[in-house]
Image (cartoon, rainbow, N blue to C red; front, side, top):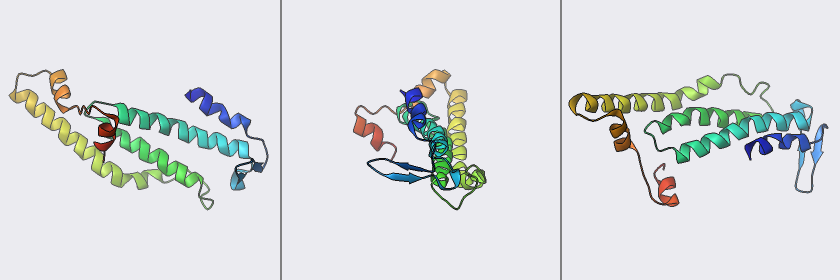
Length: 146
């Protein structure tokens, strides 16, 4: 369904203001509502897929997905900020705190795995299975992340 969601922007008119029965959207600096929705769907669809991947991934490295998730969230928030001219500018500076937490924690987990490999007779797959989280319910799966 994601290709269908991506092309929803084609239903938006090529005007400055888009009036629907629910809301009125003014494109502002984007000039055309169609163009603005194209930019927005280009950010929302990958974010949706990353969220699905994050919440369904059972591998030990799934926290690395937080970095691109944070990047897309930052870009979407800047999309709605009228005072920002370029939405993809300086995003790396804002991602540094998130990367400062995620990258070392993944590195330490990987180092711990290699330490166990060197001291035990387990294969890499057995160690990855040992680090996987396997909640049985949907609420348990959501709860493990918070």
